[in-house]
Image 1 (cartoon, rainbow, N blue to C red):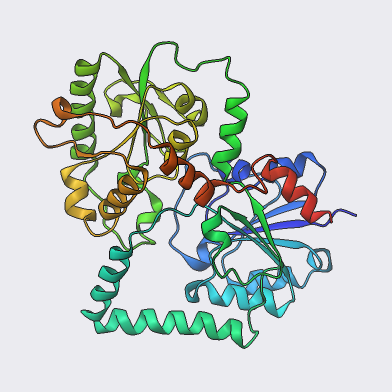
Image 2 (cartoon, rainbow, N blue to C red; image 1 turned 90 degrees about the horizontal axis):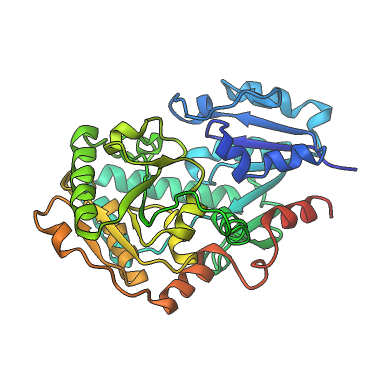
Length: 382
């Protein structure tokens, strides 16, 4: 008998979320699925482009509403896919699901190279702010204590992408290797290589919806001015196109809600990043997991940022970007420096660095020849 699968998420249900977490796939297989939107319970209200309102969507406004649903016999024995990270901030939810002895699953994926210097800088910042330090230590202690006291159950299954996360403490009864969803999309695009999205030669920019990204609030980061941000990018793209004779095409972030005018009339595409990266001459990126497409397709990659980004995010995004550039042996440029377009040069792909990234963060020897959908289906029907 197929178990009911309930997704518990602190993000809105969108077309991308449905695809990323195999919801469409389960529905097509006749599985009873529900998506529990708990945004109002754990974070600020917001909307997302591509939001969906299917009959299996449930929106909760309070812990009490969730508890009433957990009491319903039809929901007992279900798989609960927790699309919420386990931390003290969300501990009350995990305690609630543990109280009802729920069979919780998690997906651990999307890890990125980390700069050890950044970790120590963050710790130093806490030391300089006693209130933040106390809060951070309290949160970490609380999260660890709840698990140690068995007030929060271990995950029944952790589906894990990449060797880096496989080596971490996941607090799960069973750990199953999978692929990051970009890897599965890469395989699909690779196997359908006869059709190009853009006929002419082009470079690809991986848009991250940076000025409008809803996760900035969660990270406690301020927004940058969108006008100056897009002006800087378009000026650089204009100069780069004149220098190389190659048009810049935009793979827009799935949550972005703007048209091609914002990129100076350039071609923009949504949900075609895998195919676009496959056929691009080279790839430009900020700090995005989508850089995995450049890695998997062995494309030259360059990281770019603006003065506004450097001013707002020097100790986080920019530091991370430098870390990614070092890890992948790729160049990094400030597009607002006057001579950047003229001095712009790509490095030869470092295949060893790309391979290290592939198996460290995207897939494993155990999972690379099987889609995550197949692995997920096998495990929940075991």
